[in-house]
Length: 221
Image: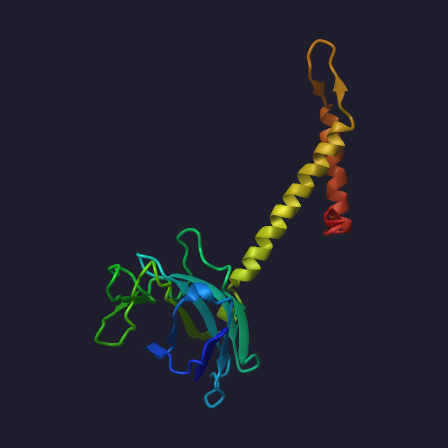
C-alpha cells in the first residue's frame, strides 16, 4: 500500500506491519539523507475519511524519538519531507509511535503500547530495534488515522517555523519598547542613571497594541 524513497536510495515498498493500521520502514545511515518521500502505491486507497500520518523515528539508547512530519491521503497520495534537520536534541515523542519501544533494551526488541493496551509480541511481529551510535538506523512510521485527527497535529517543520516566528516577534517587540522608552529618558543629577516616566510605558503599550490590531505583521517591516 505504501512506498518510501530516501534521497539517493532505492525505493522501498515492503514495510514491516506493526498492526493493521501501522507500518514502519527502516532507513539505514539516516544521518546521510536530507529528504524522503512517502507515497501510496496506488492499488489500495485509504478508506473514506482516513489518511496516513507520517512519523520519523530517530534512534536512541532508550528507543526511537518519534516526530510527526505530515500526512498523505487519497487526495494527496505523496509527500516529501526534509529530515536532515529534524534530529532531536532532547527527548521528545509523537503518538502513536511514541511508546513503540517502551521498556526496550538498548540492543533488544520492544513491546507495543497503544490505546491503553499492551500488545503481546505473539500478536504482531515487530521489527527488531537496533541502536548503534556508529550507524544511524532510523525508521519511518505510517499510521492510518481519521483525517480529522490528523488535522489536529502540527508537523515538525511548522513547529520550527512557528517557534522562529515567535522569537522574531519577541525580539522586535523588545527592541521597539527599548527604543521608544529611551527616547523619553531623562538623566538624574544625583545618580549616573536615566529614568523613564511610567506613563511612557502605558503610551508604548497602547501604541504597540493599536499597530498590531491594524497590521499583525507590522513588526516585520
